[in-house]
Every structure is written in C-alpha cells, then in structure tokens.
Image 1: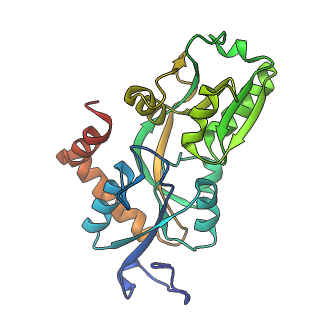
Image 2: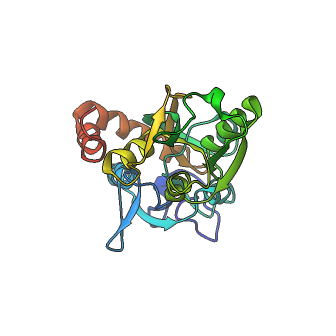
Length: 241
C-alpha cells in the first residue's frame, strides 16, 4: 500500500504507479515537527524527506493528532509517520518501524521551587501527560506507585503551560522536547528533576505490508549516520551531541 490508493496494491514499492508516500506527523513537536510560515519543518521532516528522496519516493505530508497516528497506520489511511514515536513491542505488533533514528528517554518535570524533589514526593499530586504517548503510560505507572493523579492533554505545548499555571504539579515527557522548551525559555520556569525515567528509541513508523520501504529506509539511514548527514541534521535542531 503505497500512496494510500483506494485500490489495494501488491508487490514491492517499485511497483507503485506514483511512488508517493503519505506520511503523517503531529506538528506540535517543536524541533521534531512544527508549522512555520505555513510549512512543516523540523528534524523528523528533514530525516524522512532525505530518506524518501534517496529511495526514489516523494512524500505527501498529512497533519494529525498524535493519538490518531497509530490507528491511521493500522487502517492504512497513511503509509508512514514520523512524530517522535517510541518503538514499543505493542506497536510493533500492528505496525512496522525502521531502525532507531533518535535516542530519547522520559523525564519528570516540575515548576522551579516545587516541593517535589523526587518521584516519592508525588503522593496526592497531579501528573500531566500527552494522550497516546509513552509519557502517559509512565505517568500512570508513577501515579499508581506513589498515590498521584493523572491528567491527560492532547497537545504537547499545553503540558508545560498546565504545570506553569498550577493546573498540574508535574509532567512526564520526552527529554528532547523538554530540554528544547526549557533551554529556549519557552518553559523557563520549569526544571527536570532526577535522572531519566526510561531510555527510549524513536523509529519511523511504516504501515504493515511495506517491507521494501522499511528495508530502503534502514539502508539509507545507516548511510546517513556513517557519512555525517544525520549528524548535520541533528546538530541543526539539537546542537552538538
């Protein structure tokens, strides 16, 4: 299924009539994907565009809420997605992933001056996380372990505002998103406490049945990491590693 045609296509990607990949992203991801002057920009966008070009595909982008991406891949409304998606076994059961293209992890974030210094201080507090994410799963785990409450929001930027304005006491989110927000001053009143809660890998998600796309993307991703192209794109959005 390439190009999300209404008619099912069989065989490899080369047999596609138009070689167009319909890719989803959630444009609230800061350095990973966002809208600037009407255009989608970001690390995810550049990585996918580069991989697709090397594999002789064109990309047609579709903006979606994060929690709608996996279902859209399952129903084959889209061919792939790049939205800082964590590679997990439950997701691999219903969609395919490329090799990891970003090493991440979850962190616990509070307002500066908060009485919360460790996870043990979460008792009776409210933790906010984004719908459909690994962060939400970890927030629910922490809440169950330490007697906290969980609030669910749909958009990544609102997590920070909610904690800054006192709507929640802490948030759980991916480290690169948090670091970018704090370092840029957008969430300058917040701080990370403790070490990373998890270590996670992001993968480019591909709908089942597109094994040739996965194979080509993995091949070219490996080449990009070896020839310095990946590092150049990484440094552009996240600084020297």
